[in-house]
Figure 1 (cartoon, rainbow, N blue to C red):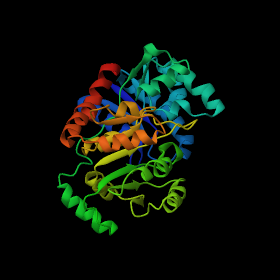
Figure 2 (cartoon, rainbow, N blue to C red):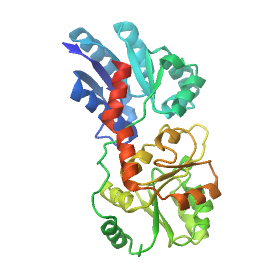
Figure 3 (cartoon, one colour):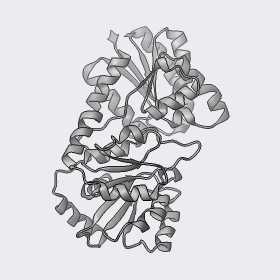
Figure 4 (cartoon, rainbow, N blue to C red):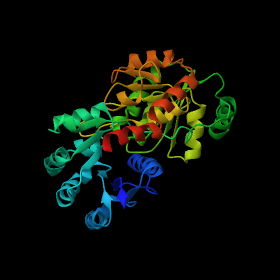
Length: 351
């Protein structure tokens, strides 16, 4: 049987995360249009000890059983296996690079993975920033293509009036939001997300009409909470921690502006910034740091504004200027980043 592609991923639902979301959706789009096979792992990284040999033997078996056009790996950490299978099967092998999977700072990792990626046939980078990191590590630019991550257009959007959503949000937090401008950030609270920096340096610059919802947990949670007390912001900044998708979607759709105040942290990177297009799918303008892969996820002046990293005055200015037509943002995001469009770009490169 002719098989157009064999996908191999170590990140797949029901495990939750950005790579899992990517793997599931790109494979699903190909399954709608082509004959494909997949080998997936839905468990923690500890299970790689059996998954890698399983992939090896399963792929060898499948290549004897079927005529496969291409093998595609869904992240860079699997590139050494890609080299082995490329040599043994003689098939073209491609891979998607997301960011951390190419910059991870372990010595042996850097000695091995970039060199393996460079020897594969086609490399898809999720952003220009990721492409730059690949080129820095000797990966030939002629093998590389840049294709963004995607989104399901109506997965997060709620077709309920914002007034009704705000009433629900008021009931949830027990605070009136009348005449307030609501800002929101969603993500793991690690240093590179810049939430602590934003709370300390930008929130005091904004008047009392602005309030800020922080959704997520992580090592910076306690630090941010302490900053709220130090700067007397507890009445304007609400830390919700980890919440169900239902609550996250409620806050996103009830808000006015999405904030991504990322800062550069050596050894870490925002490969793309999927939350930026999730926000855009709800019609939210995004005010974000002009660094790394975020620059591919925020279309300057169309779906939001990009501000120089750690520029508190710049964030303050753009937040006050963020007067976008929500439906326009939704339309732009849906045209540019829906999974159907992303699949078409993948098809053009892989097949």
